[in-house]
Image: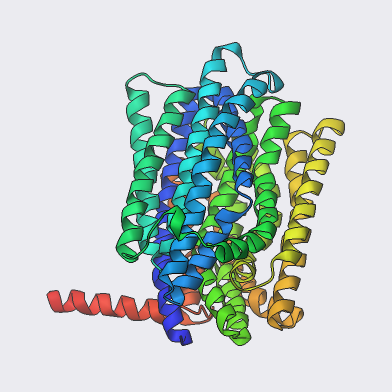
Length: 515
């Protein structure tokens, strides 16, 4: 497959990913203060703690979930429907068994958590229901990821994003309906999440069979050689999953234990914004994984090197202007977005962004390694960094009493070393690139082109402080105009620029003809 054809596929998949991410981000921004105002800080904090704890249930499936996209892509590319059926059947059967275990564990962990986190007696029942509901949602999520491997391997991210959008909108609908009829509780929120996941799973079941009509899911389709191949990969992939779970959930648990549940939102909301940016970049870079898997099968190292360089360049072109703007405008955002008392949490966001701006640009190298390379090195590096962040978090929060800022700093230090230094070294070495040249070509021009937008954003929020979220959003998008000009004029040589401009010209031409 030539570079032009790959670029067109990446563009289609990226645009569909970004559509889903944009809608999800808008929903998150609007829903967060809505729920926070109705449930209060303590119950919102309880939700964050439960969410963090139950996320670890993913480890029960020993990394099989992470292997499905890679091997589904491999067998769809080779048109081996029999082996594809084996991959999907293995993951579905694992998901059903492990999902049942996660429900039982959810209830048991919930009983222990009531006293461990000093949950108010008024919220004991709601908290237990929330734990069980997350166990149910874990089963649904594992099943959904099993089926989504078919869509990823078929390069149909557009259909996959329809499922994400539908689930997000249904979740909002159920929450608003339940709360409007007086079911304002953690139980109501949990029920909305589970119902939305059920609807999303039914959609995936239909679309996976639509794309692969010969796909069969049964015990008979499972083959031992495929199972061994997946387990060999997933054995290392579980370390990647564990490290990310610790990154996402350890600090809310530490804060909830050593400070209080009411203080958790002051950390979890800024962290959520950081992961929103990471998801946006992942919407681009995750589309590279099937191509990396294909390049691995053909032994085309040059293709892997090309994907790595261009993907990191595109990620940098997104992260530095958007992340830089969020960094200088986050204080005004928190003032107009969140309820009173959350203004100072912008400092937590700023601390996290200092490190995550660099690590998010390396999502390309992550997906390249995941889809077409040896993940043993980064798996070990990630787990060591995650363990270090937990140790530092406990030390900074409990022993030094640095509070929430200490938890953020504890995450930033090992995260920067592992993601910004070790990971690019592994990726460049694996594809045969000079690390210095790789970093220079990927970062210098995007950073320089981002400076005018960052300066403009800083100037606007200081001279014209936004009175509400709408004005803040308007100033944010105005500040992005310089970077957009650099992209359209070719100063910032974005790899998909030609494809985007051709689609714009075609659209305008159609518009003129219709008139």
